[in-house]
Image 1 (spheres, rainbow, N blue to C red):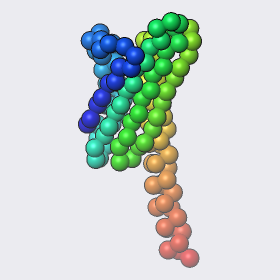
Image 2 (image 1 turned 135 degrees about the vertical axis):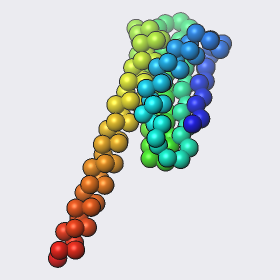
Image 3 (image 1 turned 45 degrees about the vertical axis):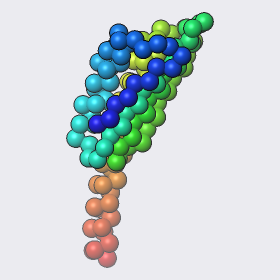
Length: 116
């Protein structure tokens, strides 16, 4: 699993990196059993003037190619990061459910074709 945290318009922060790694842990545990290489890219871009931070998360694997980003004025940087990771976690679950439903339907359609 390849994980990369990129700091844009800011210096590297060990505290922020530790917090981001802790929050990414639930996405990483979800993708543990995924086959093939998994790439996770997290882009952190705080605003220097206002509380208008931007966070992007990209997850790419054999089964998923998902992006989540959020930019909102008035939220703290940590809340913005939490929101992006929560949205990605829900999107991963939704994509997994859709893939599982497709597999179920594929098997049923094959059975119906055989009976014709």
